[in-house]
Amino acid sequence: MFKIKYLVVTLLCFFSSIRAIALSTWISANSEKSYHILNDQPGQKMSLYISVQEGGNFDIDYAIRDPHGVLVLKGESERQVESYITCNDVGEYSITFSNRMSTVVDKLVEFEIAIEDEARDPDLKTRFGQKIQDFGASRINGDLHNIERFQLYFRAKENRNFSTVKSTEKRILWYALLESLCVVLVAVIQVYSIQSLFTAKKSRF
Image (cartoon, rainbow, N blue to C red; front, side, top):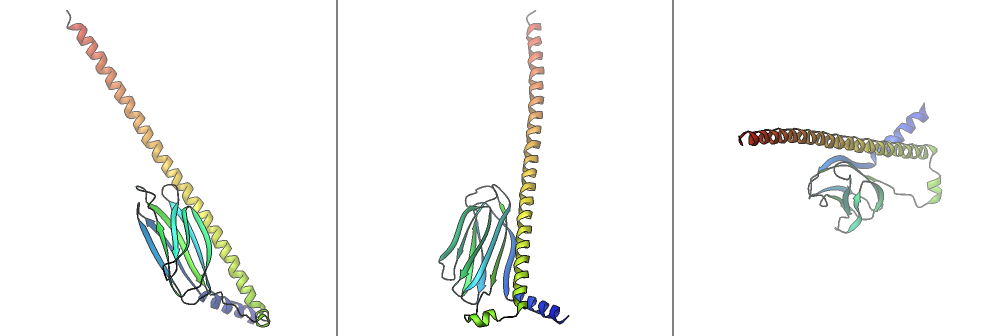
């Protein structure tokens, strides 16, 4: 019983050392949006997950800059991104999403930014002398993180497929309406053509 309580406390302490932002946002056509996350210690790890859920070809441009405005990481026309960087500077890191490649279509972007304290004891004896529960908590957290990523991946695939189905349904609907309109228009033209033909013949006598 004591071991279980210790493991739970360790897990809670481990999770409390993580700061994260998980959001979904619409990026308007030909526009940009920026978000910021604070890194309070040098050497921490930032994990980034981006997934385009709806809009166009499901792609977006992004750029990450450090507190001094220096470009750290960027991507163009990305559909789904999972990346890790080391934050060497203290301050606010910014991530900017750009939809300037699209002049008409808005895009729904789901993203998660997390900063985790990765500080390690340089003393190998102290590091390997840690209790087994600490390693168990880290392993459980890693497995949960992988499961969460798989869930996000499959949810993104489901949303994209559903969006494609809706788009195809709209196209079929408009095509059917246009086809029906053309049939009616051709029928009306034929009626007036035949009527005018008989009217012209009758006027000769």
